[in-house]
Image 1 (cartoon, rainbow, N blue to C red):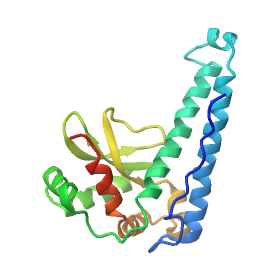
Image 2: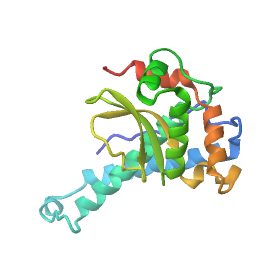
Image 3: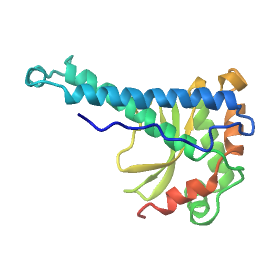
Length: 200
């Protein structure tokens, strides 16, 4: 049987500046649901039989269904772990090597922030600031679902959840105001640590 994964606890699951405790509490429940579903799917994959393997098919088969759904559960876990981990700060802007890289790749911090906000308004599910290990630059990527991070060999260091559950309680349809609140709550020390740990 596959090992059980336990939902992580995050200090940012509390009231933030402009993001209510209720939103964060409900949001964390969704994350717990992804963890539970991951565990369930891994258990079912471990129980697949030789007949299930022989029936593998790209149109429909049990192994296909389980493994595709597993990617959604894994994405839901990891995306939210990144998102929750980098909240709880006081915003502002990064420093050190991360700020220098942002200024190199985007022209200025302000240009990066404008790009991230516009990307967030254009996304259906997620936005990531990620380091491309091949081309050696930072870029703001869109992913429209939990399992659609689109770039291989790139490591996200910042995640912005743009699904309605992240902001609807507090802002209704005003996603832009939510993104502004997100900026005010970034813990840049966490993002900087992720960036500094990358092989560059």
